[in-house]
Length: 568
Image 1 (cartoon, rainbow, N blue to C red):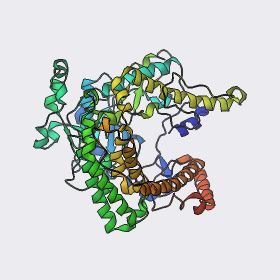
Image 2: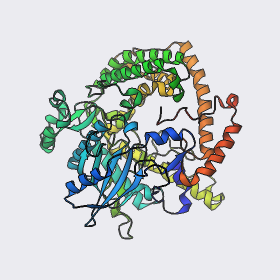
Image 3: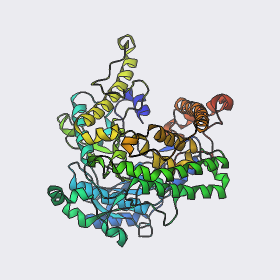
Image 4: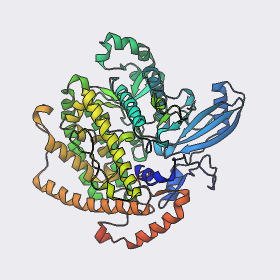
């Protein structure tokens, strides 16, 4: 994202790219915002979402008390949703969103959790969230799809000018954002999972408490949240990774869980079921980064280590200070496209950042506090021009020799410097003023514990090496005093040496893959904007012809039928 935006810094304000009707199928149902240089047929298929347009219009009119919807247009789409604007006879508008059923796995549960999360946050936090007018999780209802009809927010995504503004507006926006993130980190829930309306969960989950015991013992907090106690409950985790194609077992344990140990055991069982499917049909392994059935054997051995480790990790987390030993819900994708602000009218240069409106709460999960103590995408610097130091410093030095460069190169480097400075400013603000965040980041295992569930659930997708790396780091960084005893897993010197050799080859292949992606100027799955397709296709074919598997560490990585993040 930052690479594309920085490349276009000199081309004026970034505009929302409108969809076209060039696709052969109904453009309302089909993806039409861009193209793929490989696996295009499959990518389009999983994003094709038919639904009953007239029934959706009727649902909106009923919810808003309108007689007719006069116009209906698609205004945005991504991998997981299509977004439409609806116009009514009196000029009022509303937003309708339809999820991508095949990519989300269980769009019904994920939609139900998203709506409940939006309502909870709207009632109990100071930032703004669109009001939901109507929604359904029903696949067989009149619309033939889950949907959300919600308030149409006036304004623009922060993405519109986040990479151009500087000075006081940035500082004002940063203070607002830090405050909002802290608010999300301060509501302690009883279990790990997702937030739901009570009536959307089975009776045995309705009987469980919503909040952690500490909240019920605080009179002020109890009074504030008392209305929520009867309306909301914690249910299954809404992260699509737990529901996707190879994890689609009906009745599998997807939470809620009392601790990280139970969560990891559930993840292991789900991935074991996926391994069994791959063994029954080895041909589909080509869609993953696992290269052989033997690697599945290796992966199963690593999963057993996770089972051994899980109780000790749960104990290690239970012994951390009370002020970080609880579960919290933080927006799953705090990027510049999901924060809305008023448009700049010339008089609101600072005040437009007084309050953010956060949209797209899909997949927001309740997780142990440390899982959310990372740098959000909005302020995360992903470039390679400026180094953001790990140690605490007040500011990042300006690169030497900058004044000797041409003006366009100076501006390019300073754009990177501004983004890196925002990451540092967020990190410093949290370390200085929010002790729980600092304490979580200081724990020896937190960087690796937080990676572990995803490493397990994507074990086959990415091959065993990433899970093994994570487990080795946990084993080597384990502090017996902090973790209340010795680490229950270990690796021999031969295993470590073999892993290091494999990691070298994987890194070579990874670097060459990323270099090819960058030079072709495509996203990781081969996506390019419609208007850039022909030129990108020419670069793609030229680079493929020059690819040497022996030099580059493996076969050409961008093949039809091969690995893609969204298809694996």
